[in-house]
Image 1: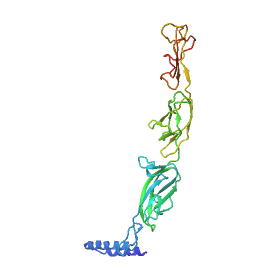
Image 2 (image 1 turned 90 degrees about the vertical axis):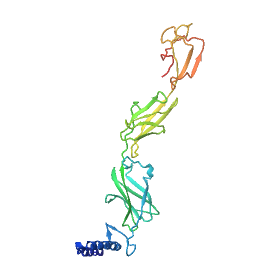
Image 3 (image 1 turned 30 degrees about the vertical axis):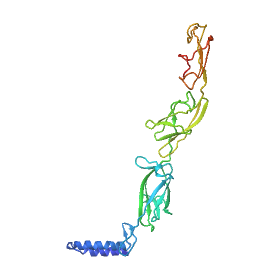
Image 4 (image 1 turned 135 degrees about the horizontal axis):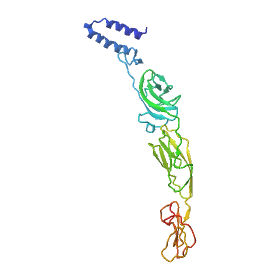
Length: 321
């Protein structure tokens, strides 16, 4: 039997001999036993408290702070409403600062150590571990004192490891990803997987997203004669990126002639006609297809009548899409 145990058992037996009429004396005895017991370097609650003098025990203090997870500061951590932090990698890395009284830090899940001890060196530490699967892990990071006996500080957090990317965006407004746009701002719309939280375009143009309906809308912003290859990527909460939705876009705003049908020379007010022989026109206009509803960009007027048979393309006399 060790000295610590035998000392305690002896004092217990002596204390048990007191009667109920000597309760005050028994309490006094216990009050004297425990400080002496601590000063001897014996274990209390599974921890060893170092002896500072012959009459009192010294309790070390120390602390640490996690300043980065996966290389990112806390302001960039992906936290859900339950304050769980997400990782798209099974390799977890914690780093931060630690006080001079901390010797090492280690990651635990319950009573099981998930990482080897990492030293606190020059006031800094870096801890790493690898999980075997995707899951939610309740972790405790514990700092030990210079004698590697006492836990000075601990911090708990839940890390959700998710390495599976979301499905790629899917087109709903067009059948093929090769699209000949009819206007420069024609919307390209599609659907997103339910675990998608954001979508980006390789040309950095903004995309409208409705997470309630899991839909998106994108416009290419091409000018006349322009072409563009664009990739759209979906992201889940852990930051996993989907395979791209690749779009091959083009936009040709060709100039088109306002076409009318005319017959014989007309002496009255100009008339536009879809088929009558009495139609006439004083002006021929060219409209760019990319700017529907705007004033003619090119116009030629004169006193000569058009008498050739040309079919008009729009009921209002303008070719406006």
